[in-house]
Length: 332
Image 1 (cartoon, one colour):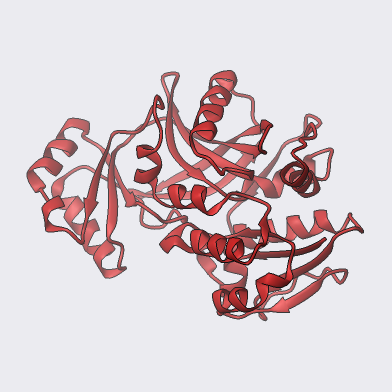
Image 2 (cartoon, helix red, strand yellow):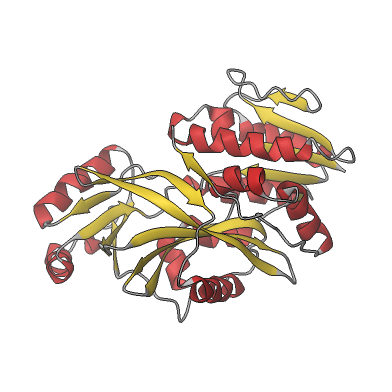
């Protein structure tokens, strides 16, 4: 079994995502180091070092796509983590699929749907979603400030954020058209064209970590999310996992329904929610490894990465026991 492993920010040295991404990469490689039957190559920026001599490290600085087009055909399987931004995850998935590399994770189809939060909403039925107004800066038709003003007046406090970005950068709380116009100028300067205006749900943020195969579905755990409001800028600061939740059964039921409606969600992935007054609102689906994996790989009784590989390749899902442990990850 020849396996390729990489994480996008650890190749492009992206400081916005590097804290989480690099640590997820290390967790995956540490798990794989326990299995002598897997031949692993991993990709990394020359400025970084993992320190696992058992595997072959290939330096790829800022030319991942061209490298994959030329070399990915040599591998049987691939585990990778990449952001949804600008279809990055989707495009990588397509290259791997076209080169007959089996992805230990979601297909390009699932990635395409989850690349856009509004597209995700449009593909789901009977799921509680946050009231949303789409603003397309490429189209003057959508800049109807009368309708936008009505939306803000209806909900009083709103969240404005990019439709297709992974990082919590550029997420703001607003209360008026004037504040919205200021944020739209920021998006324009940063070439962000599709923006979502949503009702601000003053609830608790959480996520679920899932392993899914063709036959088996398992919510490994529910995770808390530490969300910080810094002068009306909303930032993700970290997570605690696992947590007990009074709506656990309802959250699992909703998560299974979501997963069943989007074909191709495989391997390890996460779904984010906001919960208020016992109502569970879908925020987004992350069709890839997510931050709680860093903690889970340490506290799980089984080798989590190898369990995921076994699940995807052999349609077999081992019971993941967290042994009453918990842990936290803080973005640094």
